[in-house]
Image 1 (cartoon, rainbow, N blue to C red):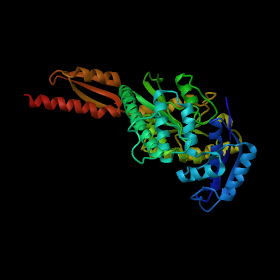
Image 2: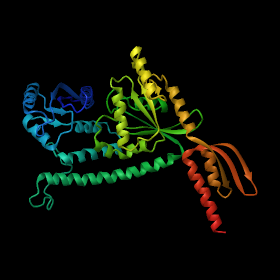
Image 3: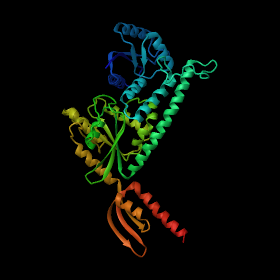
Image 4: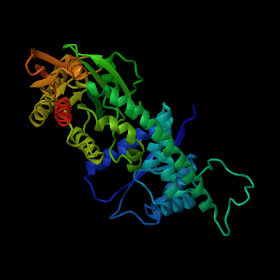
Length: 428
C-alpha cells in the first residue's frame, strides 16, 4: 500500500487554550495516520489571526515550500478549514496539494465506508464540500465529451463542474431517501423493544464494547474511525427481555457540519434510542475535552435531552494514585457512571446491571380496562408488559389488567380504549 508523505500546518491565534490547540494538532496527526499518511514534519505559527490570502504568512509559506521541495513532500495538510481562495493561493505558491481538516476527514470516511448507505453519504458530503471549493484537482463525475448544448454561451468550466455536482447530489439525495425509508421501516419494527445506541468520541472503544455485549466480531483497530457504518443487533437480557443495541459512527472535535447533515439517517439511531451509552476513553489525557466535544455534537443533532449512561472505558490502561483521583472526580460529576475495560470484560457485568435497571425504571405499573372486543390490544399488552394481575368483569364485559409496561406504550393503549368506547357510544 502506497504511503503518502505530508507536512502538517496549524496556526495558534489565542482563540482557544494552548493545551486544546496542541491536542487538536495531535488529533490531526492521528487523522493523517489513519489516512495512511506519513507525517514528515509539523509547522506551527503564532498569529493574531489567519492570513486572509494564504492562511499562514508568506514568509512561513516560502520556508515550508523550500523544505517540502528538499524533502520531496507534495502534500500540505492544514489543521483548519480553508477558503477556496486560500487553497488556491497556497497551491500556487507551494506547488503542493493542499488539504484542509474537513477534506482529510472526508477522505478517511471514504476509505472506511463499507455499506451502500455509508458510501452514498460520504460521496454526498464530499460533493457538497467540493461545490464550495472546486479546486484544480477536481475530477469530473461523468465528463460528457462533445455534448451539444451542454455548455451555455460564455459558460466557464467551473460553472459546468458546479452543474455536474448539483445533478449528482440530487441523485444521491434521492437514493439516500429511499434507503432511509427502508431504515425507518426497520426502526418501526424495533419500537416494541428497548433501543440502546453506543455513542462516543472516535477510538473510545465503542465497537469493542458492542462486540462484547452482542457477541459480534466487528472490525476494531487502534485508530480513528476504524468502523464507520452503524450496526444493530438484538439480544435478550437477564430478565428475558429483548433489547436492540446499535454501534454508531464515532464523534470528533470539529466534526464537519456537512458530515452531520449527510449522515442524518445514521444519526437517527441516536435520536430514536431510549438510552445512549456514552463510551469515553478514561486514559485519554484530555478526557474532559472529549466529554465536552461529544456533548456539543449531541446538542447539534438535537439529542441533548436523551437518557445517557456514561461508560468510562479502558481502565486496563490506568493505575496508581492519579487514576484513583480521576475516578473519584468523575464519580462526583457522573454518579451513575460505570468504569469498564471492554477489552478484558472488566466491569461489563455491572454495565449490564445498569442497563437492566434502566429498563426496569422505564416501566410503570398501570391498570387498563380493556373491552373484550379488542383482542389484539389485549394480546399486545400481554406480549409487551409484565402482568401483575388480571380479571374478567362480566357485567361490563371488560378485562381489568394490572400491568408493568414501558411508559412509551401507555398513552397509545389508553387512546385505543378511549377511541373504541367513543365509537361504540356514537354508533349506539
